[in-house]
Image: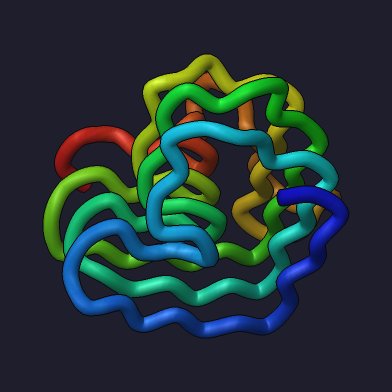
Length: 116
């Protein structure tokens, strides 16, 4: 997936693997903007993708005003869970010029952690 913008979207998934893309076991995400996303599910919940593995060169992904709610495990602002190292991906809790960005303390904004 590349060169996409998702704005003001609500996704209310059933159980697991919830996001614009439920699961991605290969491929790439490039030049994607997520803004004002509200995503709800049980486990593996993220604005862009619930679960990823074996991604190629993923880059230039930005997310602002992301709200992800999971009743189970593995939730993150952009990816619910990933098996990869992620570079060139930025999530902002508020706006791009807002309070927190995707530094070490707010890594959960990008890549979900076990048991939220």
